[in-house]
Structure formats: C-alpha cells, structure tokens
Length: 379
Image (cartoon, rainbow, N blue to C red; front, side, top):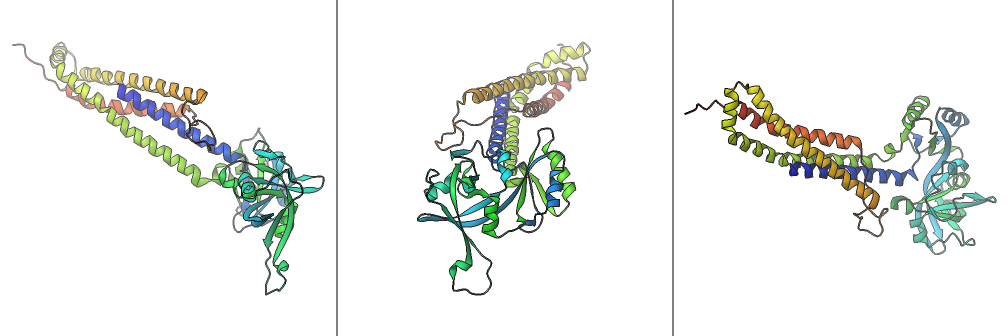
C-alpha cells in the first residue's frame, strides 16, 4: 500500500510541477507575444490597406489592432555596436499593456513631445552600455538599402536614423538580448516599407474567448493570412513541455506498475494462507464468483487506500510548495525563486484512475487462483 501511495504522490507532484512550468513560460511570453497574431501566409510582409484594418477590427471580440514592422538592423551606441531586431509598433500598441509590468528602467513611452524613443531589452542595453538617463546620446540605427549597381558613396548603400533610448524591458533572455521597440513611423522610414507590414497584433476583449476570435479572423481573412494564438506562436516549446509531461506520466505509470507487484505477491500469499478458509466457504455453498469477488475487494481496498493516501500526500506537498516555496530553483538568476507548481483536477483524476486500474489488474490473477481452489476433504 505504501508503495502505491508514494508512487501516486510522486506522479501528482511531477505533473503539477510541469503544469507550473508551462504556466510560468506562458506568463513570460505573454508580455511579448500578442493574444492573436496575423501574418502573411507566404512571404515576409503584406500590404496594409484601410479595408484590411477595418475587416479585422469589425470581427467581434477584437479590442485593439496594432500594426507591426519587424526586421534586423545594425545598432551603434558610442563605440559599441550589434545587430538587433527592430520592432516598429503603431501608437495603440501600448494600449495592449503588455510592456507596463516589464519595463525595469525608464518609461514605457515611444513618443513624447514629438520625440521618438526606443524601448530596448535589458541584454541589448548591457551589450551597448546604454543608460536611459542619458538624454544626450542617441542610438544610431543602420539598415542596408536594396541598391543595384555600384556606388562610390557609401551613404547611398544604407539608411541611417537616430533615436533616443527611453526605457529598458526585461522579459526573457531570448527577447532581452535582441529586441528594440520603436514607433511605427520610425520603422517605416528606416526600412522603406511604406504600406508594407510584417504582422498585425490583436488584443481581444474579456467577453470573448480568444479561440473563437481567432477562428472568426481565419474565416474573415481567408487563406492569404496566417492567424495564430499565443500557444501556436511557440509550437516547438509547448510541444516539448507536453512531450516531457507525457514521458513522465508513462515513466511513473511503470513505477506504479512495479509498486503494484507487492499487491500481487501479497494477495498470492493470502490465497495460500487461506486455502482451508476458502474450502470452508465453498463447502458452505460459496460460489467461485463470490470467492473471486472477496479477493477482488481485497485488492480494491489496498488500491483505493493507497490512491487516497498518495493523492492526499501529493496535494499536501504541492500546497506547501505553492504557499511557502520550500524547494528553490537553486539559481540566483532564475526568473522565480521556487519551483512553480499548479495543481489541476484532471491530473488527480487521471492519476487515481491509473492507480486503480493497475492495482485491479494486479489483483486479477490471485483472485482467479482463489476461485479455482478445490474443497479440502475433512480427514
């Protein structure tokens, strides 16, 4: 019983930790990723038209539609330089409030007093030694032009624009070391995109389900556009988490199967010990079905008690971790101090079902042997 209980508790804890890690990753990316993203099904960009914006905006559940231009460019700040990802966003982008909680220095402003500002990642600021408090040194941004033929004037080979650093955000290393947010007009002039856009980022209203809005957009825009939600924007990452969770479930399933062997051997020994008692019952008229049921119920009692104790232990450990964070990540640079845990009812339900099925299977053979016992004649 203890083997089943500890196996059940371990399975519940592991599944809850994977749920917590998945939620943590989603919360980190939610500051950067839009709820719904619209991109061209083919190619790097699409033409922005008033009809397209109106069609997207009129879909029920769409609250904010932000126009996006995204491309790589060379950034220079004093004597340091690097290639970074420039993300030009329209004025209503800040209305989505995705950067409000992640700006660690400066202010989340892209335009102030008709002056353009860049909101850059923490890693970019470290590489270039940028301080938002320095209002006298601007970022120099360079983007190559699509020039045919040769030119002796190097300035004709690239577009050069300047912008002041306004704020620094910290979301996740992948983004912090690459991205700069700039006003859309700045990106249009830098990349010479005119009416071209790389994507539309959409915030939905609370009254509508995000998946329903996504499906409505897919129907409205047709096959020319790719419409993805938050999870679909990182398919490989979330798929890897689900695969790891599945393998953990399978691994602990086999551990529980091994633990249930103790039930199998216990019931077998019980059958041997109770041979005379079984004979007495059968001589009194007990059927083979009744004898089989007795040992089935014995296995059921062990399995149910083991599952109940294990589920309680798993719930207790997870609750302590959620409230007190007793098990830390062990890294000073980790996003959270303690392992994230999220308990889900279905995990407890599926775990209980697995335990009961395994232990019932382990009880089958001993119960069958007991029902085949012959009546021992009294000598």
